[in-house]
Amino acid sequence: MQKILFLPFLFLPCLPSISMAEVNKLATGYLRYGSTYYFGHLFSNNSEQDAWITEVDVNFTYRVDFNGEGESIQFPYSEEISKSRLIPAGKQSVPLVKSSDYSIRYHAPERATGDETDIEITYTVNFVKKLPDGSWEDEDTIIEDIQPFVITRCGDGTIDRYNDVYTSKSIYEQCDPNDVNEVGWGKRGCSLSCKILD
Image (cartoon, rainbow, N blue to C red):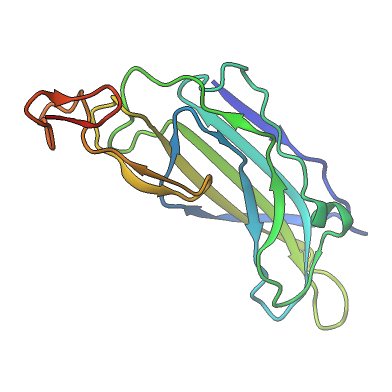
């Protein structure tokens, strides 16, 4: 299943033509079963030209309906972009969109491995830059950032030890009861809460 959300087009005095997108596949993030998340996307204008956001599209796809509410997640514009689509030259990390809350209430039968992902969010940002004469470029620059996620849980066969950057929680499993290699198991194995049983 997938969810495609098209946010309103923001008009300039003239309609720009469209160029090919620059596509960036971001590092895989980890989401924890039982946690609630808010997703968002930042835009940095590192150039010496002002930029104007013309359109933001968000494509949210998932392997399983992890929150049990179907296509309920929304990605409204941030407060900053709602006030002004102008991103001044050299402006760092302006939030474009922020999602509604998304709770991981369910999990897939097996953990995603290799190139598999549980959730993938694609942020497509269209913008134009201001020219020295004060006019705007007549062709959009398009940046497409793809953020993949894998959902982790105790009992998925993998020992998870990481800091959840989205919830600021430290995830630390001593072992995993479904780890076929029985890494870190005690004399009596590994508990259902991923703790060593001696």
